[in-house]
Length: 420
Ligand code: FES
Ligand SMILES: [Fe+2]
Image (cartoon, rainbow, N blue to C red; front, side):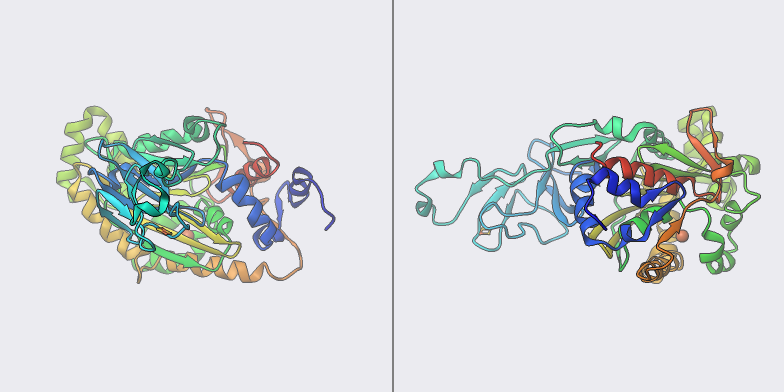
């Protein structure tokens, strides 16, 4: 291909209803994505509930970069880069912990959990204390949070987190309503699944309503689950472009038709008496609607998937390698729900789980398939002729339509063309 400027290059590779296969395989595209998406835009990093106490820290990431989320002595949260300011060793190798200082293993430099350099061994080698100034850990340029969900951006300016999230803030609000105390907790621990596939295969699949009936038919059968039917031609559920690359499979129309509190969770109010009692006490009349509507199924661009009962975080490592971090959602004041969320998470996306293994198999098959050079393009045209606009002005389609995938690529094209 001739060298074109970025916007014309991507306008050529991303066309209405189809995208070019090289977008998943070309290392130069991946390098550009790191600059224009992962290191310029808002990326989800972690949740404040993962560092509840002063001195707590957890190791997170923004793409291939390792990031330490800490809570300092004053209770303030920081996003520090996991790179020693001496000679770039990883400062933190434990996944999490509590410590008043972080000590680099290579030559023993120590840092406070706000990132400042506390000291180094054999200080005279540096000509005294003064030399320490300005040698703290690097930090993610901007950090903002919404309902405890902490995002980072390496861009000094550009849209605020609120502007980036746009109407996706509703999804976080909805999630918090499932707690009698209005609070999500990320405390269940993390599983990691590495796949040999481009990160966008995963991104697109999270709100792909076309595949569940086929890819997940065995688990739906074994678990006698009604989920498959939510993603059929007869389903009232909708696929949605929420703007800014955020996408949704909105299952509420089906749950409202059913009209059963906790129906979204495949159960009934009678089988979860304590949780339902506490929700009714906390939310009053609004509780019924919350208990019927259930939890969102939303992909927040580019890396946070709110998957009803779990949270997934995508981490691209290379053009054909991605890690999917997953945890069970937990809610303050909801032990009965939390217990079941944990069990369902283990059963579906745990090491021997039946759901994510299906998807992972598809990602890797996809990556192998896209190496073949013909027919070059991937088709994303499903439902283009029947798109419509909802009352909030968002484009929606049938449950199985590729509205979300087209939305992702349209946003991607804007960013790769230089937009922020
Ligand atoms: S690289 Fe960290 S102390 Fe030398
Ligand atoms: Fe799936």
